[in-house]
Each structure stands twice: as structure tokens, then as C-alpha cells.
Amino acid sequence: MRPLFMSIALLTGFFVLSGCTTTLPQTNAPRTIQAQKQDYYQVRIPTRDGKKLAATVYQPELQAGESAPLIIATHGFGGFRAKRPMSIYGKSILTGEAAIAAWKAGYWVVFYDQRGWGQSDGHVHMMDPDFEVADLSNVIDWSLGHLPGVKRMPDGQPAIGMIGESYGAGLQTLAAFTEPRLQALVPLTGWHDMNSIAPNGEFRSAWGAVLLGVGGINSGFDVGVMFSDPWRSAFDGTVNQDLKDLMYQRSPAAFCDQGKSPHADALFIQGFTDTMFPFQQAERNYECWQEQGRDARIIGMQAGHVMPWPMQQWRGWLPFYQTDDMVHCGDYSETAVDTILNWWDEKLQAGESRVPQYCINVTEDRGIALDEGLPVNSTQYALPRTKVTVPLAGAFEWLMVGVDTGTDLFRAMWPGADLRDMKPNGGFGRPKFVPMYIARGDDEVLLGKPRIELNLGGTSGGKSMPVFVGLGIQHANRRRVHVASEQLTPLPEKGIYELELPAVSQPLKAGDRIGLVIYGFTSQFPLNSAFLARNASIKGDVWLPITREDVLSLKPDRSF
Image 1 (tube, rainbow, N blue to C red):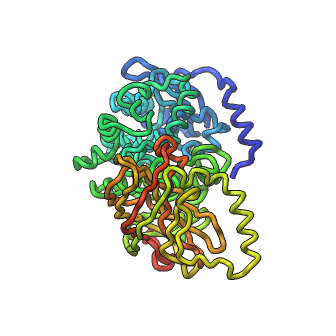
Image 2 (cartoon, helix red, strand yellow):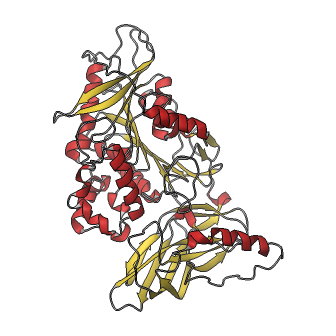
Image 3 (cartoon, rainbow, N blue to C red):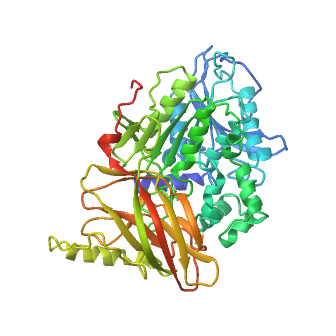
């Protein structure tokens, strides 16, 4: 975690004018003609429709006759570029940290503001192929035409890598199908199908408020198409079919489902506690890339898109977006930045293959190497008919943090006082928790993709019966039920649900109770809850992915 005073200094520095824009002569020389020193400068890159994109060029130190690969870097929704090495993005966001590290390691880096954001012209088009995706090709054209000494691959193609988080990750995975000059991608916490921001058609309205607020500020309160049809259908907490179709079209899923092949290899990095784009989004991209014969690898971290406490646990000072500092994968243990550099070195510099195939950070200080993917074995448990008061169950959970802490201290004074065993609890003011399993040892882990087959009913006359379900963990001698990997899934109306829940990666301790937790209200979906009291009933089956770490841990085949 970075010191707060440094963060304040970086934030202050963002508002300081960075200097004049540099105009570069055109060149397509694959090697430098004369020596050049390490430097950085600001440029404006023209687009096909006459707009100008603000960018910072990070020039590596090169001797005459040398060349270096090029990294294109860009930001997430509502973000901005790293205009200098000592900047918010350069010191606080993994995209910027890796880009600056690549520059210092001898790479060219072009870090640009996407249209409508930062200092770039134009309006936000929400990842339109004719605008944001086409702009990336313009950035590559300009870079190859103005930067001397961009390295070529053995087949003559330029050695180009890319990195970006969230919105910038989506840009990479879409451009991979249309831009053949990209070679090595690092999509951080992106999407396979943009509809994951609206599971079961229920828009993640807490995130919608954040995106609208942050996006409005950084775009000069001009968020482009967000207020036009069909995007504005999400303002009431749901998405209509036109928006579902549009988000699908602007997703890698639309290309993968047609059997189209990406041009670039990719290192996907995704968070298990990411409440915007769950881990499965990266996993599905990973599977698509592999099916089409591309080299794809995946790192499952704990963090990602994170809402403020008490909605989610914070793992650093930066609001709304955090990533793990380290990658732990069996015997492999490196910083996230060095792991990304290892990937680019392998793909763009013919370096040693050091990045393992499939890594899972179980916690921030230990992880597991897997051979193919998340474990598929899970155990089925019956959920008896359970009643929940909607919307009261869980509505005041954040107020109970102090009460739970005090009662836990009192309970701990009497060994053996925790006699709840497998008894359900909550359901009125607290979320309903139905325990199904008690961990036997500290080596057990909740890792994989839970499944549910549930029948949701209730007392209201209509179909609407919104509840939110997830896996819950209740520690021994503790009252509070923690949502595993902080992921809840909306079930908006009466009916039968056969679903895969968001993937989880959660260590367990002996005595932990694991089961289904049911909310009638959650601040993750504040506009999606019912506002008239009613009783919901729910029954069915739940599959829990519980195993032991020593069963899963594998020695990666790659040499480190």
C-alpha cells in the first residue's frame, strides 16, 4: 500500500500544466539513425474524423542503429493517461506502473487519452468500433510513422504490445480481432460480454452511479452517448433488449461466438472480488484465445473494480480500482509489474518463457498454479424452503458492523459458546444465511465456480421478487456472514434459476460455515430492490467448490 502523502502529492501534480506539445518529423525507420536519450514529451495524434488525441511519448535510451518494441497504453472508463513518470497513473494504477517500467527497461511507450477523456477531443462512444477501436489503429499508424527505431518481428510486423484496464482492456480484446499489428496484450479486468455489468438484466446501479459521476468529471460533463438510447435504459436499474444486443456487439464474445481468431496473444488479469466484471469474463476470453490457437495465460487476483467500504473491503488507498502487488503461482512469485514485463520480453524480445499458464492468488500473499483452469469438482447440497423478507433482509447490514464486533468479543469469553452448528440465521433485518458445510481444517479453500438450481417464489401477486444470492462464510464464534469474494447475483423475479455464480477464491479455516446467503437489499444494486415489503421463499440445490490446497497445487511446467 502506498503512503498517503505521496498519493496527495501525485493528485496535486495532476493539475499542474505539463508543458508544450511536441511536433515530431515523420519517419518509418526500423532503427535509430543517431543516439537518443531517455525522455518523454506530449503529442497530439490525429484521428480519421479530424479529432486530436492527447498522448505522452516515453522515449527509451537507444544507441544509433538500435530498436525497441512499442507498448501502447491507455486507461479505464473516466481515466486519463500518465503524463509523466511521477503521476497518479504512473505510480498508482497497474497500467501506468507497468508502462513506466517498460519505458525504463528500454521500450517505446505511447500512453494516450481515449476520445472524450482527459485532454483528447471528441465524445465518448462507449467502445464503438468506428471510433474508440478505430482510434487505436490511428495511434499505431502515427507511432510507426513518427517514432524511429520501433523493432520489427522476424515476419516483418512491428513488435507492439498493449496494456489497459477495464475500458482499456475491452479496447484491446476488441482490437485484437481487427488490428493485425498487435502482438502481446495485457487486458486488466476487462469483459468477455459487456452484459456482465447487468447480470440477469439487472444493471449494477451502484457502479452506474460511479461511472456517471467519475466519467462526468473527467469528460467535462460530456459523457457522450450515455444519455442517449439505448444506454439510458439502464438508469432505472434494468437494461432493455436493444442495449443487451449493443453491449454484446461491442464484446469479444461476438467475435468468439463466430469462431473468429484474435491476432495477438494475451495475458489476462482479473480479480475475484471484482464486482463489475467477475473472473469468468477473463476465463471465457482465455478459452476463446486458446480455442483459436493463440497463446493465452491468466492470472486471478483478489482485487479489481472495488466499491468503497463498507460495500466492499478496501485493499489500498485508491478508490474504485485496486490490484494485487504480487503474483503467487506455486514456486513462481513476482511483482505484477515484473510479470507483465516478463510477458512482453517473451513475446516481443524473444526472451525466456517465465509467465506460468494459470495462476490464482488465493490471498494477497499466497497462490496456486493450475494446469488448465479452475477446479470443476463441487459438492451438491440441498437448500430447504427458506423465507426472506424483501427488501429488509440485509438493508441495514452496514450499521451492524460495530454491533457484531462487540458481540463477537463477548462471545469469545466463553469457549464452546458457539452452538449454532448448521442452523440458518437471519432473514428479516439481517441477510438470510443457510449453512451447508463446516470446514474441517485450515488447508481447505473455496475455489471455483459455484452453481445454483433454485425455485424462487413469494407472497406478492406479480412476478417481481428481487433477491440477491451468493456464497456466505461465517467464521467460528462470529456473527457476521461474509460474502465469498464479495459477489452477489440478482434473481429479479419468481421462477427457476439454473445459474453459475461468480467464481470465488477464498481460504477457509477450521470451523468456518459455508452456505448460501440471501439478501433482500444490497447496496451493490440499490435501484434493483423491491420497495414494498413482501416475503420471498426459495428452495433448491447449491453446488459448493470446496477442496484442499495440496490437491490443487501443481508445479508449473515452465522453467522460471
